[in-house]
Length: 307
Image 1: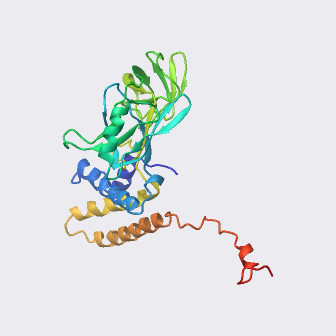
Image 2: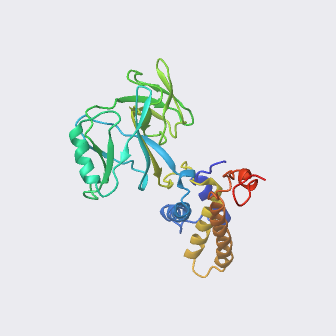
Image 3: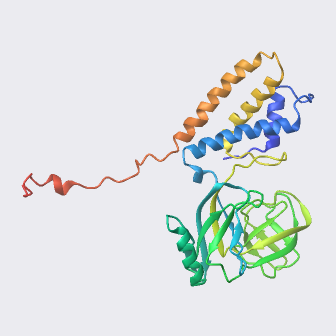
């Protein structure tokens, strides 16, 4: 499915309303109208529990020896972690969440046992909203994940990056930095270049980049992406027309007395119903289950004998 940029969506709205030369709708207002529509779609997706179809993502957690508390990804939605795993020597171990009435006692037991690759668990803590929500690991890790700082030359639309050094880099590492999309990983390491899993979003010379090994991998539900610049893509591309229509209605509402708003509101309601029904049809209906063969019972009489 083709994604539209925020710039394309904004220009579509401005052209439909003949606002190319007008300035009474500020850029900040236009972004706000877009965000309102995206947040509605996001809420409907979560209401139907189909977040994994749209927003499931992953990010590395960089262990530091002696540190027990780690930040959640900045774009996580409502602290929704779907899975956390530890990967080492070709084996994968689940880091399970401590639950139940005895989770506090269990956390202390784990803390006294010491760290092994198959023994970790975690809890979610929120001491102070100013410090942010944390993941606390039990027992405290005694190892440090590999993190490599480097600089690179990015070309917008290209996945090849010329880097200052390839030392310490490996295929599968996560790469972060300005102009790099969330969740981007290294696919190939050359002599002076690396190949990324996604194309660079912006050009940059000497851009500061960070590579993190996926020793500890967090699967989570992310928030919907809200556009900040014209090149940003609109999340949920199948509903771009609803987002655009919401922006149209909000622009018209600002012009007091414009009778066109009535007709455009009616179109918006129709598109809103279409969004809801489309998402509802994506909810699993269990019709993919194979019915158990009961033929043997049908061949038996009431007393249990065979005809």
